[in-house]
Image (cartoon, rainbow, N blue to C red):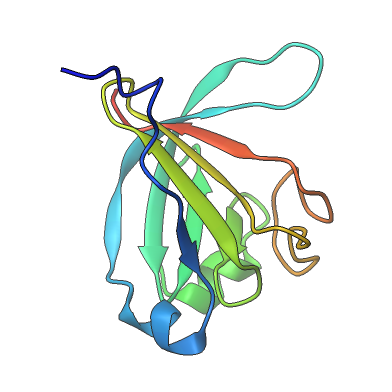
Length: 125
C-alpha cells in the first residue's frame, strides 16, 4: 500500500455559489494546529453549515448568523475564498489553504485572515 503522506490526494477547490450551496451540514470534532512560535494541537468542535466552516473549543449550537456573531467561534466562509483542500488519508491530516493568487478573506474570523497561510486539521483523532 502506498504511503498516503508521500502521495496526497489531489486538491479540491471550492468557490462558486453553486458549489457552496451543495455542501451539506456536517459536525464533529478534530484537532487544529495553532500558529506561532510554539505550535500545538488543540481539540476543536466543528460545524460545516451554509457553506461556512465553523470551529470552536466549545460545542457549536445556533444558526449561521448566531455563530458568525459569536466572538468565541472561528470560521471560513467558503463563498468568499477559493480554497485547496489536501487530505493525507493514513495520517488523518487535512490542509486547507487559499487557491493560488488568493488570500484568506478579511470577513473570515481566524488567525490567518489576510494571509496565504495553510490551516492544518487532524481529523484522524
